[in-house]
Length: 160
Image (cartoon, rainbow, N blue to C red; front, side, top):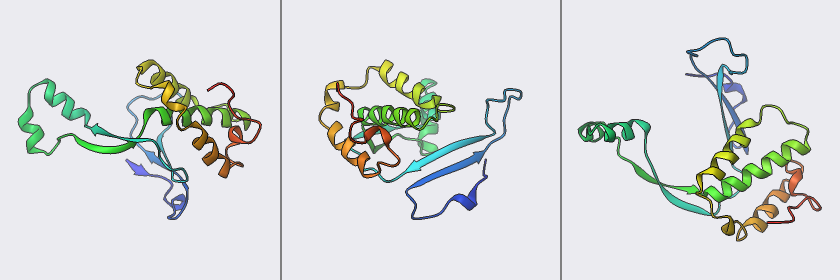
């Protein structure tokens, strides 16, 4: 894999888009990009947070086939990481979809629709907990109102 846009990656920026090229196994579908898009944004505080176990797919597989020796040998044990809650990610995805719609950028953002669907179907979210932080999220997004049209005054969600 190769980073294809290193000239666009600079330190001390709030938002980064990394394009990482990979070798495609399948050809033909024009919809399939020749790169992975990795996006980072550091303007918003991640809250609420929780500690979650992080593991690798290979570790899960090695457990399934009872090869715990390889997990130890290659230091593939799971570890804990503090991450943003699934409820906050869900809310951020909903706001992102609203922003893209208001900006008339409705193509190529199916990843958010997919993520929203998968989070909803997972039954992992506690809808009632969203009421505890939604006002803060709206206030935070209003700080960057030119980027977050859906959080501007008069655009607020009414039934949450």
